[in-house]
Length: 172
Image (cartoon, rainbow, N blue to C red):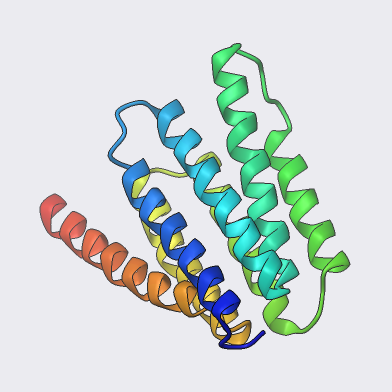
């Protein structure tokens, strides 16, 4: 499959998912942001699945569950006590079940770090955490030959780095 037409179609799928994730943050409501991110994560789920990169695949699946849970929670005003612990447990369990090599742990570690920051952190912490997590995903994407993942991670690292510096300069 490497470098076949199917391989390049899989890469295009990830580029489209990245494009959707960029559009998501231009939505006005958190619910709309999360819905577009669910669609983006579904596309990335299939991207990693067809690459045989199951650690990335399960991480995207759990992101779909996480974002869908938040949308439902907020729509119906449900309490979500213990939600963070449930997702951390699922990521930890997945890291054991889908372990292939040290790099297969990177997406799950990035997801665990990111969900803690999202759950408890302010915007500054979320940006810095995302910046670090993009490097973990970059290493993983290189390992699984996700060319689209590598390119989009580099763009995300640059963009997030600029946002961190700009935010730091604005607040003095």
